[in-house]
Length: 89
Image (cartoon, rainbow, N blue to C red):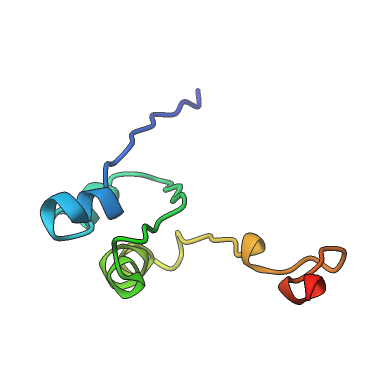
């Protein structure tokens, strides 16, 4: 029988502001126990983008076996029917 267990991690910008890092030292070890990871929106004007990128967004997928990785960038592509930023200029 299939089942699922979900767990939320309090990592990201607020965690960085409190602890000076994006995730705990053993964060990647904690994630290794899971079959899937859903990474939501990350970012905060109080935290530089490079801190978010190098402290959370790059370490997670590079630590997971490429065979187990599956990602989508669909939200980062402009759809053909959607007006781009210059459409209002």
